[in-house]
Length: 128
Image (cartoon, rainbow, N blue to C red; front, side, top):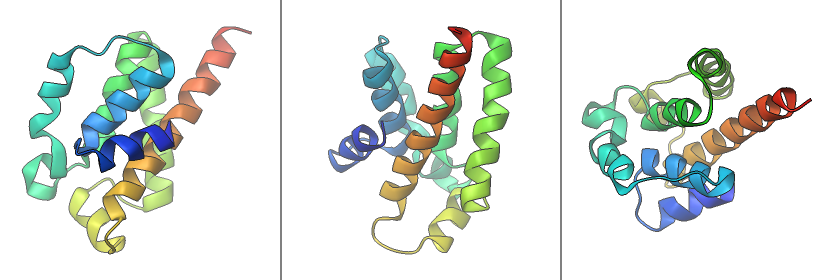
């Protein structure tokens, strides 16, 4: 999923769209154009460098795949793992701390990787 998300990023999709598209491709669920269009305005920390939009899209993905209770539990797991890696959930801080030309690309890829791991882990538990 990481490679897919980065490829979408390099093709001009914004951070949140990359996560949703990569997850839809990897986990084979329908992703209506309207879902991608909804993400037009949540990139770049909602335009004010607030909450990183890969986090929003990752949590949306959990809601698309799992029931409410599971999605909420996995949301915390995802946010904790992301925060452990980057020490922030804030777009502006992430960009400052990861100051190079590939910062958002790397963050998109890492978020996709964390999300995929959590989804696969939960799916394995569900099917055991």
